[in-house]
Image (cartoon, rainbow, N blue to C red):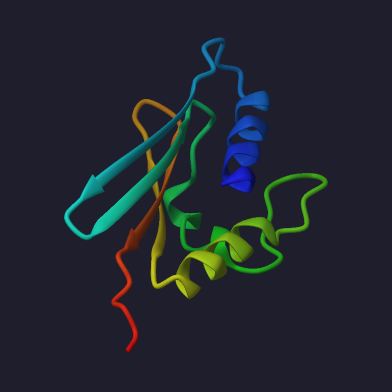
Length: 105
């Protein structure tokens, strides 16, 4: 969560947009919980949306390219999904979806 929020802050800092908004939302739907982080930064190029989760891929001058790869690994190890969406007219939305784990007996 901290990495997604910091990425949103960094993206908005590099944006020319005067209105910078960071929103965090949660939703419970049946056996799933969704956590969304949305920003008004420059957004994600749709052609690169799959690449951003690859280790060592970065668009930051001082980035390591590990943050989103680690986030995705953590979410997937909890049998969840991390996805990214472009927001109109600009911005990005990252969604973590976690399903209730079946109890082990």
